[in-house]
Image 1 (tube, rainbow, N blue to C red):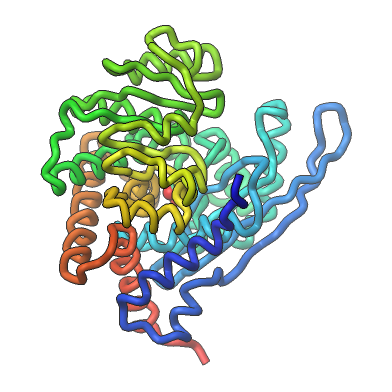
Image 2 (cartoon, rainbow, N blue to C red):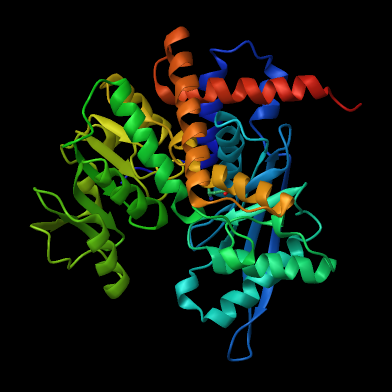
Length: 418
Ligand code: GLU
């Protein structure tokens, strides 16, 4: 297998590619390609048996020109410093493309949380929150869920922060449970923006989403919700996968039923409505109308891209295509709608949560979903307008052109401190 692309280098390449279409000076471009600050920690956490374990953790604050740093915290054994740096940069351009007033950040702990008890994960999370305390705050840096973290971890971070600061500041973190100050619609938001992007993309390309065949790689929070919302549009979800493998049914699976099966058994495989089971790689090369990568970075590299037979790709994961895969797919006329738009629903509803926290006034789910749709559709229109007017090679470049220009404008308006 080819060497894995370094996600931080992929991000830098994406910025260079888009900058070529913008009037941006080299010194400013250099600024756009590097994080402002990266915190690296070794957390010592007591396990249930009384022993101590060291965990590496990171928080990268990439750029704050448009507002406080914003982005999730992931718990995964594959977390690296460069991965967190890349993810924090993607957050900058994601927030800019949907035009919400944030910069970008990201955090991660090198851990497989399924190897630890809930009490151990709580101590680890509170220890991270304690170390992050001087850097986070509703006007500074606002964490959120990401891979293997959710409401539970966000509630602990909020509680730790508020206890240590002796204050009430629910907007210090988003993605909380409703009882802890979360927003209606936040859990569904990432998958919802993937569905909205797919819907707009098919309309833009003059294709019918109704009856379209769809494959979804990854069946976590983003993947399974995207699958059932796209199914609700009348599309036919023929294959889904998780780390255990893929399930396939020619006439379509029932996306909600597959999720129930995964909740009961821990994996999508073994679902009895499937005709066939195969590998993740087989799923990525299925001949479908729409492919939704919804797992981790680098799912499709240059080699695999040569075998991709989908017509449209909508990225629910962050960074699922390497730059080489992008080149191959552009050449093959596969339309790729990028992560920084298609999964931006999560951070957009995080923004709504933060607004509600600050106003102490809470919205209905209907209002959240309406505002989300407005943001995603308007971002989609900005992106396609830019794609056409500059005659750009693909939609990712268009998204970065729109986003980078917004970051540069904010930076230029503020000027530099001597
Ligand atoms: N982790 C999500 C993302 O990658 C959400 C971030 C947030 O809500 O701040 O976009």
